[in-house]
Amino acid sequence: MGLLQRFFQEKWLEIAIVAICFQLLTSGVALYLGDRPLTLIVTAIVVLLLVAVGTVAAEQWRARKRLIGGEFQWGSDVKKGVIFTLGLRGHEDSGTIMKMIRAVKPNYVGFLASQATAKADITASIVSRCALSDSQWREKIIDPTNVSEVRDDTKHLISWMQSCGLPNSELLVDITGGTAVVSVGAFMAADEAKVGTVYVYSQFKDNKPIEGSQRPLRIASYDSP
Image (cartoon, rainbow, N blue to C red; front, side, top):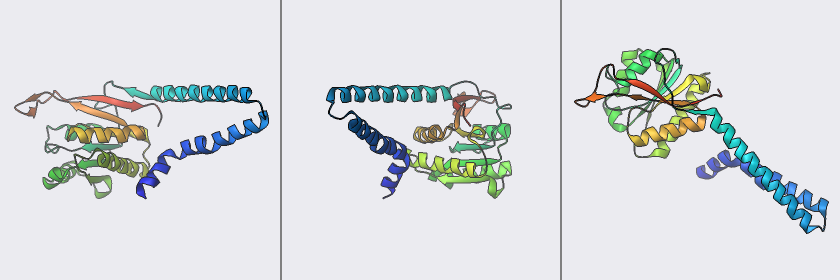
């Protein structure tokens, strides 16, 4: 039942256009043209061409709205809500999460934590270090091997921040920490919601990030709020 409900939620517009509006249109044209099959065929071809042109135009418009790459400035790019994918070193002062929070100073913070990071109290350590109140943060315990679950939980965190009055332009998903699967799932959710994503690049020595080498890279951003 849940799968069926999700299908209708995601495809209701296509169903309305193709299964209802398009069928009514073709039936109306057929009745109007009567017994003129050649004219009916030409009309159907014209309608299909118009649909194809409209689809291409919509995709191009969406592509223009999504901006790929670019620099993310620590101090000037202010975001009021940030969602982080957590790794086991996310709470360290030299880690990218602490740097991002101190630079961006978000009002709301979301965490995508695995059982391992939850057991290590990574979120609790970050919350304590940043003096976040209970209303300012939420944590989702995810399966780092289940990309669909990660995507859904990221969507929940995005919805929570939106319910707090934050527009998409003031939200950010940081996909630096955690596994590759978690980063992919978080990016998928952000892309569907048109929320910007960032990855913090670091140089490492002895398996630790080199202080001062961190550089936030914008993965995607969106013109629309």
